[in-house]
Image 1 (cartoon, one colour):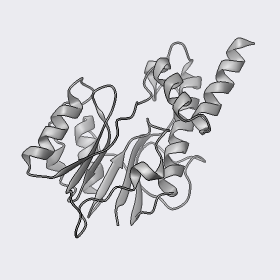
Image 2 (image 1 turned 120 degrees about the vertical axis):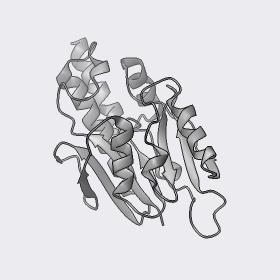
Image 3 (image 1 turned 180 degrees about the vertical axis):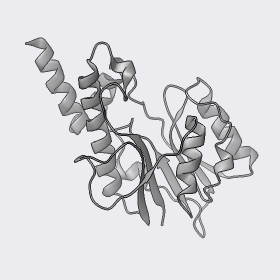
Image 4 (image 1 turned 90 degrees about the vertical axis):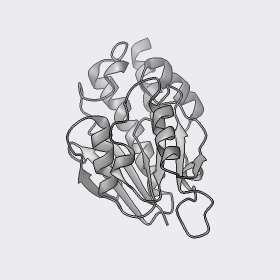
Length: 209
């Protein structure tokens, strides 16, 4: 069975989702980030897994459901922090971030790296050119180190790294990260019953008053 790994920041104003400001205030952006994180963690909690790990920059809050092992993020760039998060795991591990509250247990229940599986890795591209999911049968940090992050070709470079290592890669459906207000509206529309969509609706209603 797979280890599910979430990498996230504590949703504090001014530290998360800064590209949502404006139109949202830092406090509102952090509130949306908290809702997205809560949606993500509860989806992971509802997905069968060998282990559930949260690699966290900051401190846990009431948004954290039971059943997670919390480990601190390492330092350095995002590639180094992702590599360190994988290093805290063993066996087939699927990494996701806190930016896709529309994710479902069905999307996370991918088979790879197990006896009889057709794939050694899985890869979920993001609409912005990055990736929302990365699964490794053997969580080797070297597969991430040096990959340029937050660039238009991040996803392409990361997938090419997997293929160059001789891994058979299963593709997951593309998802949209929440980075901008436009993203937030699109993701809320895709997951209308999520905490994220409800939080966005409340913020919109407060602004309209």
